[in-house]
Structures are given as C-alpha cells and as structure tokens.
Amino acid sequence: MSPVRLRAVCTTALLAVILPVLAACGGPSETANPTAAATAAATASPQATAAPPQATTAPPQATAAPPQATAAPDTGSVSGTDLEPGFPMRFKNTQFGIVNHLYYTDRERVLTLNSIAGFEWVRQQVVWKDIEGPNPGDYAWGELDLIIADVTRKNQKLLVSIVRSPAFYEPTGGMPSDPVTMGNFVEAMATRYGDQIAAYEIWNEPNLQQENGGRVVPEDAGTYVELLVESYKRIKTVSPGAFVIAAPASSTGVNEPSAAVSDEIWYRTMYTYKDGIVKDYFDAQGVHPGGAANPPDTLYPENPSVIAGCVYSSPTKCWNDEPTHYFRHLENVRRFMVEEGVGDHQMWITEYGWSTPNNTPGYEFGNYVDEQQQADYIIGAMRRAEELYRDEATGKPWIGAMFLWNMNYAVLWQSRGDPMHEQATFGIINNDYSPRPSFNAIQGYLAQLKQQRSQ
Image 1 (tube, rainbow, N blue to C red):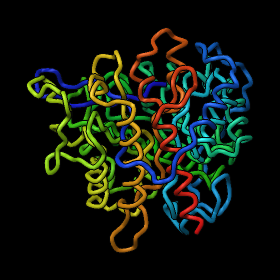
Image 2 (tube, helix red, strand yellow; image 1 turned 45 degrees about the vertical axis):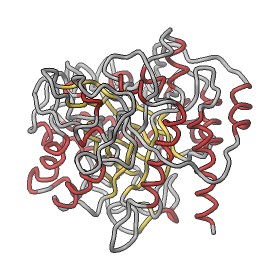
Image 3 (cartoon, rainbow, N blue to C red; image 1 turned 90 degrees about the horizontal axis):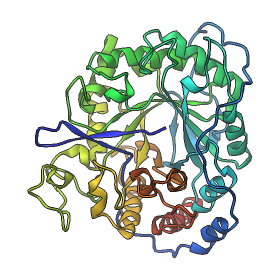
Image 4 (tube, rainbow, N blue to C red; image 1 turned 120 degrees about the horizontal axis):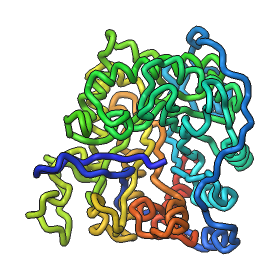
C-alpha cells in the first residue's frame, strides 16, 4: 500500500518517485492543544507489525452487472444535509480526512488520534489481489472486516482505494482487461459492507507504469474508463449513497511508456473517450497534487518558489521548475476538467502532504522542509481549499474532500527498522505516536473551522 507519484527532471533521468502531496502557510489563530494527542499516545498499545496472511471468510460471489443506478438519495454514512441535491454527488462544504494504515496495527489508537485532530474521514488502500483468491470469486475479507467495524464504531467515514488485480485476471497486477472482474469484486464489497463504506476510489495513479503492470500509454485511459463505468454501475446498484471517485493521476509531465503518461494527457483522454461517456459514471475526480519543498501558495511559472539552501545547479533544480511539483497544480487540473465539460464534478484530493528530512532516494526535497514548515504548509493548503477554491459564480467549493498523507506510517516504518523512510516523514505523528507540530496545527485549525461553520 504505497501510492506513489512521479516528478519530471531536467536531465537524462525521466522521473523520480514521489509520494502524496502538500499543503501550507499561516497557522490558525486559535492555539492547538498538544496534550490531548500526547495523552492518547501515552496509552500504549503494540506498534504495527508486518501483515500476516488474511483470514478466510469468503461470502458468495457477486452477480452479473445490474443496470445503472440513479442519483444517490440521502442515505448511507454520508449525511444528506452535507450534500447538494442531484448528480453528481457534491458536498456543500469541503470535507477533511487523512490516510491511515489500519492493517495489523493499533487501530484504536490511530482512529482516536484521527478524532483528536478533527478528521472525520479516513482513507485506507485495499489490495484486491490479497482478498480474492485462490480462485475467481473466492473472497477472504479477513482483517478488512475488523478495520471497517472499527472505523464505523468510531463514527468516521471511510474511503477505500482499490488497487492491484489478482494474477488470474492480470498477471502484472495492473488494471484488468475485463472490467467485469473488478465489477464483481466491488459489488461483493458493497454488498458485504453496505453504507459502512462511504466512498470508493477506483484504482490509484493509473498513469504510472508501476500502478499499471509495468507500462502505460495514453490509450490506457480508455481501458480505465471502462473499468470505472463498470464499477460505478455495480456499486451504485447496491449502495447508491456511496461516492465513486475516479482514480487520481500522478502529478507528472512525463510521457514515456516505461514510466508515465502526463496527468494532463491522461485526464483529457479519459474525458473524451467514447464521446465523454465517463461524465455520467463518477461523482468526483481524485487528484494527487505534488508539493516537493514548495509552499502551497506558489506555482510555476508565474510564482515559482525559492527554496532556501537548495543547490539550484543540481539536476533536480530544487523541484521548482515544473507546475506538477506544486500544490497549486490543482488549479491546472480544474482547468482541464472545465475545458473538457466535467467541471460540475468536484475534485477530491486523496493524497497531499510535505515530507521532512528522510533517507529515501528521490525524496531529497524533504531535506528542505522542517517540521514547522510542514505544519505551516499543510494548514496553508487546507485554508486555500476552504477559502479560495470556490466557483466564482456560485461560491460553492470545487474541492469536495481532501485527505492528508499520512497519520501513522512512522509507526509502521519504525517496526520495519527504517524510521527515516520518506513515508514516515510525511506523517503528522512520530514513530512513538507523539504529535508533530503539524498534528497540533491541524487540531487547532479544524476546531476553529468547525466553530465558524456552526455560526
């Protein structure tokens, strides 16, 4: 479960692998309470360990595809009062969530920290090949049953991100050639869990070769549309109140079959495939804006950032010379959507964040972001989405939800003996569960925002 992102470089290297994305700027006026998180951290439970085999509790195989569902009613785990009427499903106010690692870990503690910080949504990646098998239609849900029960008990809303085909459908683990196979899986999931799953993200960064079986070309966006259409139909028939999120493309300008397709080409190909059929088969577009070491209010080329201490003669040029390295690249993606006729769909940022110093090649930009800057950038991004990313005519938000990367990967990587892994340094808690400055800043900002919205 390691969503990744690419960044273009100016030398012979085509790309460097990058993880979720970024946010930031001024902190809240209300002082955060660090003791609450620290108290939760002090009530220790075992740290995460490597995942054991999943249990076998397979329900019956899903049936063949039913007809398409109509616009979602006010049902399910998402309150109807939070939603705009009609299709596509849209939130009246931007929602805030965080990416968790909930498999084989101290879920009680992690979910409690989510609540203390003020997050109401959780994103968890689900690896399809680890659940279906050894034969098609055999489902071993195992630990996922416990994860969903715990998230539900904590009154948090769950977004699942589904990746990796079983080998009997696609030997490389990439997108299956037959969309019905994934339709069967997501229908079985929706049937089993009902409104305990509030949203489904259909695949992760399919414009990257490592997410699509080792090779990717623009035409694969059409294959993805077929997968999304089938999945949408099957989920909505069983769980019409659930959001269906189109896969976020990795923010990259790279076009090379052995590496990636640029996000702009990917999105535009998706939206024009078969005369735009996809427009009726997703609720919101997932996005993964990059950020590198760039503050969230900057954007290349009109307002590029200057990174203190970075050697600008280096091959990477400090990750500030291409728009896909910036959080505000969201504005470009929004433009792509409007120009292709899907601007009525909100965007969901399902990964964003800033790494601090780490030891992972390709993530050296984290060496130019300290923990306080990380906090400032995250709050800046949240403020930008809440206050600025709104339709000029209606004032309504075009960011439906945003999920910070991440809560507890530092704990996971500590258990694996690599506490300075870049996934750990994107986190907002340390490997002993103690809060980083970003945790405390988020806690204050979301508490302040909740109060403002209630007035």
